[in-house]
Image (cartoon, rainbow, N blue to C red; front, side, top):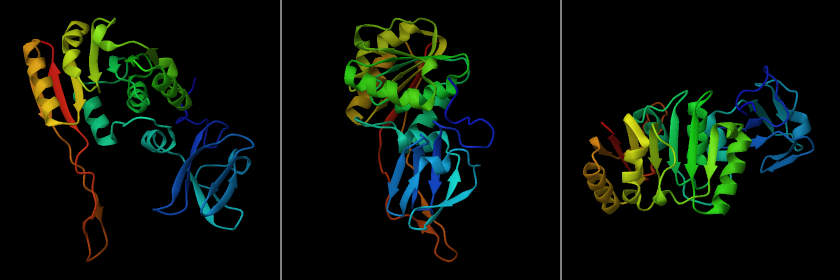
Length: 263
């Protein structure tokens, strides 16, 4: 299945995700399906008006408000079009996980827990075209939602979904990375060590310092080396000549990241 990010040519195809841009504050990501209608504060747009148009073209809602058709990024789709029932990994944390864990085309990655599948989809997009993500989730209702989200992006062929408690063990061996977003990742650190190849990376996301301490101690005790604990803070800026300053609001904390390597 082709990725929904890679549209054939420069025209919107049925099933593609499309970003409808009104202004910097008002923009929406929708799925182009024939017969669908999208209702916004700016008015209603029919999918039939979008399909077949070129990216960059403009169109108007039923009340005459103009918008532009833009091809969305992976980030646009995952964080604006996916359905969610759980807390999700923020883009800043997902990006660092992929970079520091060395995840790329051909990588074999174990993930737990799947949750709504946001990170699963991002990992799957990164390991294409020859890699695989093996994702573990104990709650079947979350797994079904994740499957739908990942399939909508068109990267489900790169994911193996497992309705299994990862605390009971990891089936895969010689994987390149193990990524844990669990309440008690220290319970899985030993399994991760056994699953990873030499040089493979363990990456854990935890929200509190208590969890941070336990997972770092567990990683060291399990024989991991180069154990690092980090936190990313992202602050946006209001940029206007003579008035440039940080935005008044920011996401001050999402979680802590632990990275460790199997020697």
